[in-house]
Length: 116
Length: 116
DNA sequence: CCCATATATGAATATGTGTTCATATACAGA
DNA sequence: TCTGTATATGAACACATATTCATATATGGG
Image (cartoon, rainbow over all chains, first blue to last red; front, side, top):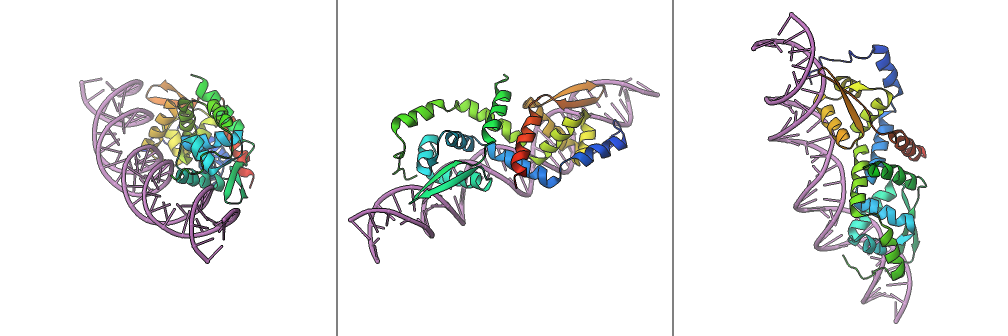
């Protein structure tokens, strides 16, 4: 880290101003955690299916072509991120989306991806 | 993977219908890659600063409290993801956002994060 | 040309992560 | 209560990834 050029291009006041408006580290960390959840094809697939229909674990595994254990592990992550909710009926656990913003996120991301 | 319960809760037609509407694996992979880029606090911080102002590498490093090399590595990832663009002036390279959807993504994510 | 400086890059390392396997737990039915 | 089934969980492994260090590349000034 050769810090020869320490912000000589913008003024000290400007630096402080921009820095002050930076969201708290904790907020940034939570944002990163949030996005990280979407950064995996398996979870994305699960979320897509759940956006169509409430589904049980076994059905999700069959649809996504994943093992039951793998799906269960990923669902735990989605649960802890408060992106999905569960409904239990006997031994079957039904999962569904618990965030109305997911579709919106998909749309914005698709816009970017589809721009070549 | 004990597949005893293979989609007995939804009909075969429904399965096919839902499966058919699933975006191509390649699209899902690209979506995941896109989100993964946002899933890191350092990159998020860099993107935040760039959303305020065009900045050179050294200034970004100073603002984000990162080493020059680390910033450069992350900027390469952001460049390859087509999220930032560069402008060269002498030996100084200025970075700025190259995607008008980033702010929108931030907003949606913040909404989720701030909901407790 | 040579030097100083801004940025980029490659190797190495430490840490994180997704899947699998084996197993535990929970619940319904006989 | 015993059995079968749906889901959850923990350990282990393979793989990805962010940072650091050292160094390369590029550009402008003298």
